[in-house]
Image 1: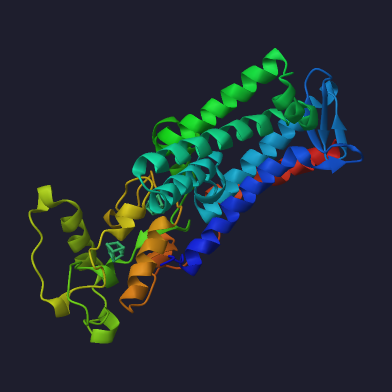
Image 2: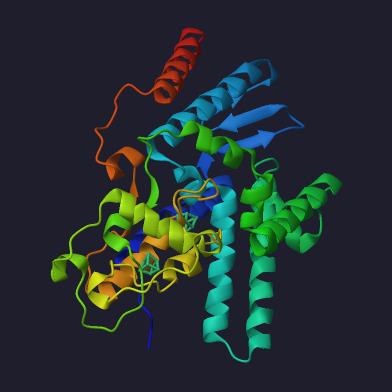
Length: 346
Ligand code: SF4
Ligand code: SF4
């Protein structure tokens, strides 16, 4: 039987898929008869959709990088790690390679055939990624024609193979280790967030105490159990997350259980191998995979969704939202100042 992804899963895949399509299409776009985006280093000429930059315009490029950096800081403070979850190249290609891996394993037998198809697909995508990237620095049409005529220059050959190897290794093997061990933004992002920044969180008041149960028990609301007070809820969550410290968790009668089925679906879905029930964690890339996995379980048991959800710390604790936020204001004022300087110097 064909498995149909739940609506949220399909929606979440739209942004990464669109960005991948945009990347592969970029070097093929034309503007006034020329390649629309071309960093032609030998000619010292940068074409940006009709705007031509020469070496003396390098300040524009530095300004654009500064504006993008401030925009990312502001976005992180206001919306959390959406860059990590939806737009970072590491996330996009890891997701694509993982999807190929799972699709091949699910559809092809024997496993050796699935592995062969997976590696061929990974190699093809990695090579095309290298060609596409180099196609932003060397005209794409002759570059692609060179695949068949073997007429690449030495530097074209080096960089195509370099980026193909990087894509293959990072997306096929290193994956989220890059986020954990190598990415500088991952180190800085938690510092840019405050108590009003949305993050993925677990509704312990509704979910705890967690536990397996027979089908037929309703949700806490359907049973009239209601929500736990925040102190008891965090105590249960802490005990479950740290059995070595707190000892084995007590067993509860089914009518006292919260809505967490302790099914582990959220943990299995997490690319960072995190348990969202242990509280906010700096390695969380806000991809929402645990939200989708838990919502699917809630729907299957006819419980309300949203046991794992995107919400700020203040919203979870019922505190009012603050509008004067130092990090957001600093980023916004820097962005306005940069744009003002840029417009003034035009
Ligand atoms: S806990 Fe894991 S699955 Fe959930 S949003 Fe964070 S990284 Fe994604
Ligand atoms: S997927 Fe939901 S119900 Fe299952 S363990 Fe995670 S939080 Fe609990």
